[in-house]
View (cartoon, rainbow, N blue to C red):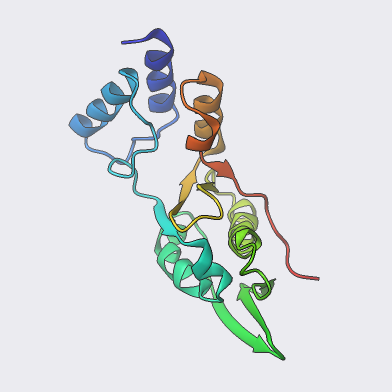
Length: 177
């Protein structure tokens, strides 16, 4: 086992990345990372959903947020989501905060980041220790992870994975002006 990878596995274990797993699976996840394996393996994590940026940009973000809702409830956040059509604009309203998702088809990233940023706003307000992190932002195969920021910082500090393989923290978003 490499010393960097072994220290990373120990730190992630201390941060509780695998605390939801039975002991034998937790040990297996720890060993895999200690041997250089990827720590954000969706087979060992439970708080994640796929996100297709085009789906979000086409005004169907409510579907993604509906998938995310049960995960968020475990972290103290309840979502009320509605899609509103107003004179050619499509707004995604999340707990009263609006995100404009039309005119984003050529650049679907804002239609993905804004709603997830609203979610982070509510996670922060609830006192949850986790935040939304996004892997492969703006693509059709993005992955939304709810992770403690310290977990992602530890992986980044370890330097064992390229930046594009590390989920990015989504900045809180407080709505469309």
